[in-house]
Image (cartoon, rainbow, N blue to C red; front, side):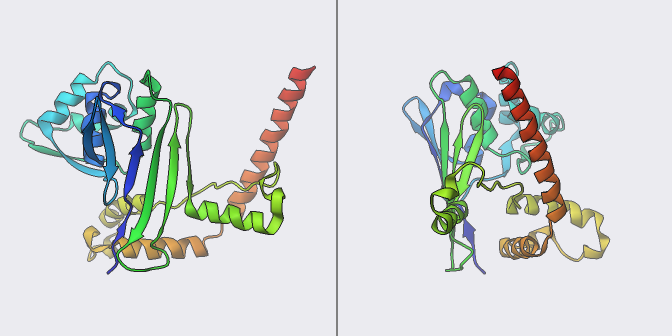
Length: 252
């Protein structure tokens, strides 16, 4: 069986004072963390975690200490925190439906020194499989989260090789509308097994990462989204017309 890894490095150092107590606790669970001056260097040697076991007392305390600071993380965890009982020593936190990029974006919004955070990830595999290697880079600012994978870069290079300078000209670009996330597929498996009794003989932890990778590749190759693409093209064309109307109206 092949093991897939996604070692990740976060830059720059995140100042301790820019993080809420809750953000600091959760980021220390998602990533490895090393103190560096007045902040923390976050990285993941194997890959970021999206399922954390946190001490209940520490989680409740950090949640309470972060009450007066707007935070998407606090909003996301509010229901889970409310279900913690006095008998719980540890709490399992599921972050599969909230990407850690949004935690850093909240930090940037309130930081007096940070205007961006970058994440660089390498996709590696314990065996030399063709689908096991690559990478991506993500740039997080207060206004946007943007990223490119090595697959995106290769597509751009192929376009440029075929079309030359036209490949980067306005009107030629192609835009990704949907990406199938293996983490999201993994998160959906327990709910499917709970509701589909014909699959009751299969345990969630019996589904390997390799099974998910193969399934995602098959679905991507066989799914027809032509109707959805046509609808998106129509809505984009309509939005472009309205943008031109506003632009020309403002110029008069």
